[in-house]
Image (tube, rainbow, N blue to C red; front, side, top):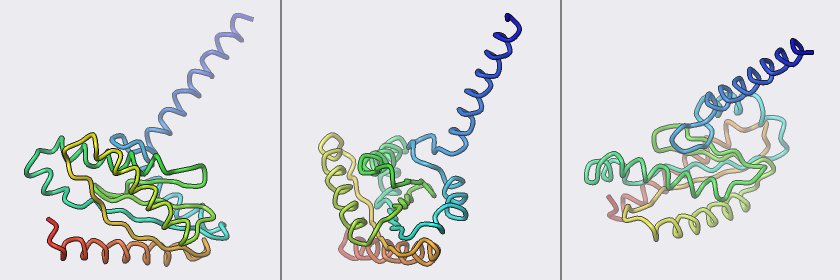
Amino acid sequence: AVICSTISTIIRDNMKYMHEMESMAELDEMTGVFNRNKYLSMTSASYAHEDTVAVIFWDINGLKKTNDELGHSSGDDLITSIADAIKKVSNQFDNAYRIGGDEFVMIMRGGTEMSAQRKIEEWEGELEKIQKNTKIRLSASAGYAAGPGIHLDQIIKKADEMMYENKHRFYENGEK
């Protein structure tokens, strides 16, 4: 009985450790959203079977300026604030990923262009709430697209293109 109990404890501890290691391998340490590796594995395996998906891309505006003028810790605060707003609007059908230094993606199972637009509006509302408690200017350009999961690559490309169009408009309007 003692040997069985000891073995059971060892197995349970090892399983817990393995689960912790798996989580660390999939999550972005700074923001708590999934990382690029998880994004790549999910986009190649999981979403193609979905009837519809919506994709939202975000790219932070002014990160270099924040880093240069206020320091990298302020830049980190900018990144985590954007991610916090994304996490607050996520639900069980959404997965959020940090795929680059200042780039985030959300993939919404069963999403439509209308639901992606609403999600962005909700995100903007959350960002406004966070903005009240910081002196750092919180801003990110967003783009979205939706369609059948089998066409995920095309949906991702369209959402990314829209995000860059919005980013160019942001900077054309005199923002730095």
